[in-house]
Each structure stands twice: as structure tokens, then as C-alpha cells.
Length: 296
Image 1 (spheres, rainbow, N blue to C red):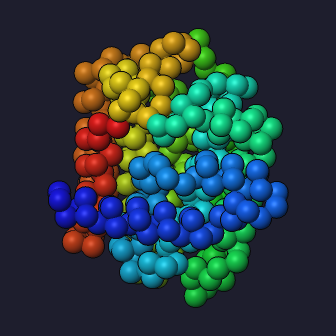
Image 2: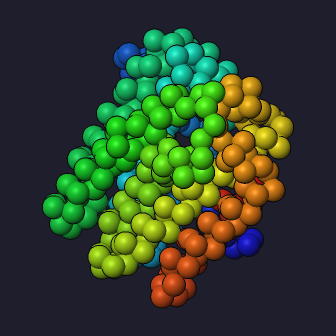
């Protein structure tokens, strides 16, 4: 596992450096907006979505510099969603990634605009850089990320989440919500990384998508468990918020022990989806272990 930690650290440093270059400089007007954008993105986070993109890129023999752009686009969408989700009109949180949330550090209007601008920048990157030798494939990549971020993906999942406060959801209802809210962007990260290369056929891309679907659900199950068990200092965000706000979670539906069992089942399903890929899928397998066994 030390080898995986070295690889993950290397990829995290790669994406951090690329994001630093791609984001507008803090001294360019409008300075406060650009500073807020950088604050929302840089310097923290597990970078799970970029790691998935890089691992899938290795599977598809993609050029790392191309994958880095796709990974950056996904991470910008993720960062924008966090900046908006933390605002008083939604989850109303004051701590994210171990520091004050964007609207607390700046103000609500600036946080809103920073999220808007990060979303726009993500799509600018997908159009500005050559990510594949086939323009039709690159257009499909733009559509893929747009769908993952929109009303049939992440934004729609957040809407369902807000409507579900105070309700007791069944496990299938939770899965439907989180396939959209969390899972859509995780699936997009893996598929975008793979589409930067040309080493996978349609059947293999479908296998990768199944893997990412299971991993996306497992990520949320583990998040729910950690929210119930881990302290704020470990999480880098306010612990226990789900229970305080009466939000339906896997823990409220299944209990902690059964939620952990479910996460392990999802990990096994994800690994099974990679059957036939051999050593080329090593990093994807290790990421499945990391996501389910993580403590933060």
C-alpha cells in the first residue's frame, strides 16, 4: 500500500500544480473573485476525483498531461459544488477542508460568483485543450461532464437531498439520490480520464462505468459513517451535521455496522467490475480500497 500512497501523493501534487496554473491569478481583476476561486479550490482535499481520472487514464494508456486537464475540470466542478452547498441557503456550514467555508471567508455573493466562475472555467478547459485525437470524442466528453453536473446528475441529486430533509428514505431511495448527487461526478471523472486515451473499447468503458458507480455509492456510505463516528478535526468539516439537520443517510437507514458491511459489498462489486483488466487496473483497485477503508 506504500506504493499506492506514493503514487497518490505524486498525482495529488500534479493536479495541485496544474490547478494553480489554470486558475486565474489572484492579482488579476476582479481580484477578490479570483482570490475566492483559488481559496475554494487550492491547498486541501483528497482529490479523489482526479485520482480516479489518472487511474482510469493509466488503464486507457492516456497521456498524463491530457488527463490532468480533464481531472482539473472535474475538480473545479466539485469545488464549485462545495462552495454553493456550504452556503446558508443549502447546507449552511462554516467549515470545509479544515478552514472556513468560502462564504465565511469572503461573503455569500462572492462565494456564489466564485462557484459560477469555477463551473464556467471547467468547460472552458475542456474546449481549450486538446484531450484526444478525435474531436467527436472530445465533444462527448464535454456533454458527459455537463450531464454529470446538471439536473440529471449532481445538481439534481442536491435538489433531492434538500427535499428529503426530515424524511426517512429507504435504501433504494438513498441510492437514487446519491447516484446523482455524489456518484455522477465520480463516474464522470473515471470516464473522462479513460476517454483521454484510446486503449478501451465500448465494453471496457462500460465495465469502468460500473466500477465507478459502485465506488461512488461506497464513497457516500463511508462519508455517512464518518459523519457519525469521526471528529470534526479529522474530517476537516463539521461532524454530526447530518443527524443535527435530520437528513436521511445510510447510517439512519441501516445503522453503522450494516452501513460498513454495505460499503464492503460495494467495494467487492467494484473490484469484480474490473475483472479481465489485469495489472493495468491496479491503481483503480487500490483506489477502491482507499475509498472504503479511509478514516477521513
